[in-house]
Length: 138
Image (cartoon, rainbow, N blue to C red; front, side, top):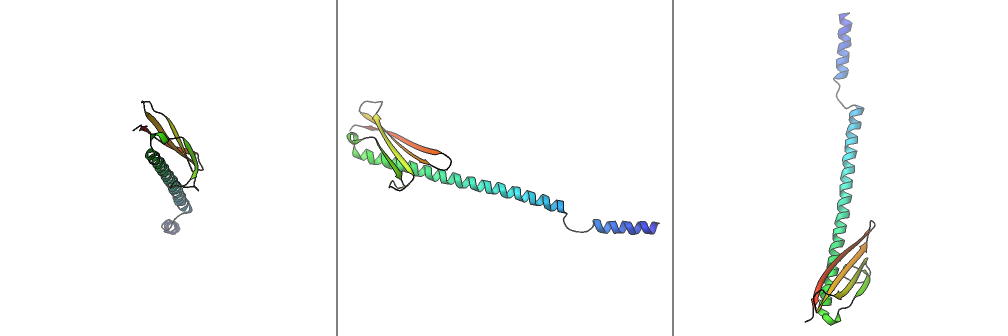
């Protein structure tokens, strides 16, 4: 009886000492890998989206500033409200930006408030950037 018991124990020890992974271990590892890859992909998508939005905002600020500088060079009496659409990043036609210039009387005598607003739309929503300055009569 002891001999049979020893043979069975040795057989079970051999089965338990085999090297390798079980199906459950492989499934857990693959699940962890999939979750990690999805999180990384989501982070990369958000980084790309935020980078594109930052580039568009910078372009919009540049378009506002360029328009303010060009209007300031015209002089106080030549300032007038206007609107332009389909501007590219250099202010030429063929892009997705719209620029609105609003000229109103300033809060101080002999000043005009010049506000330039650039807007654009992406697949999520509409965006705007505005810059304003006071122009004085020389």
